[in-house]
Image (cartoon, rainbow, N blue to C red):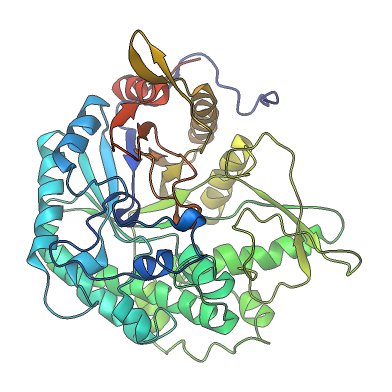
Length: 478
């Protein structure tokens, strides 16, 4: 690996304090399995993964890592690791098989057992209402590009809030709406696999609207005093050359401010509207929508993995598209055909993503400067590496030193940001378990716990033991 900069090199004994929350995260379709059991309906990811050529090796989430059936054992695993919190997502089609109508009680019962099991083990439940598994019936009716989907989401939030709203500590409406809108409806490399730039921008707005309506619905029915949140994969984009700053501005508007503008400021950026005028004039934004979207939230979730480097394309030669997303699809950036993404120096993870802890520090400072006083949590950060299982003293062991180094360096960047005044309240490693990595299937392993996909046995990697010690002490070793 390359040497670490002084800004992100861990010093000895970085103390996060007793109130900082160390947790881990998963998503329903990636871990649960039980795709056709107990009344669960079909999601867009069921359809997408069963469509030949969409997912590497034809992998699906039908079984995933069987978390649905192994719940108690996985809860015990979390307790052994000393997690202070567990961030999970709720499968919308497990609650409402067609995305509307009465609740499926078996689905609610599963999540009730999950929440109760967490609380019994002194682990805070952090629930995400939407992590990309839209009921297929709603997609058949138009999906996120239509307003009715946001309205259905509010009804779904009401159902889940009534069932779990006395016990959940943090409610997150959406995970990475950028991915749902642009990878799903513009690039076509995520479900539902559409390549329609105008539809992607409509999806952006209706996801934003779903966030606002979802917060309103939850606040109307919960009976405890939870914190409300949304999670974004805000992009850290570096300029290259004289045209780089303009490329950064446009991508920042499309990828970041298209969501933070309405959610945290109550308005879409003027430059976003101007930049996308050849695609749409945004007629789907109704008069009261922005007031609904602009809900007060307690904490902003940030997912971070890598950075991008960009410039305007001069038209000479092949345009470079090293944008860290699956190859073979259309662009996930509507209206940016003249922007190119340049390869970046390594080291890299198995996803081909550059490792740059400084980018996380820069992102935290940027969000802090834009939204002073906003509490933040790192809701996803982690890395896929080519883990190897070896036998040590007759037992299987995964000595994932690269992952430990990755986590240590990024946590050092978080600590530095806190020292510089950023209000970061917690960190969730992605992921608790190796799992179904969307269009990459089971080829990429992000977990701090290895899963043998043949036997579904869990093996705690060295990174899990390292993270457990961090969660126990709150002190990042040097």
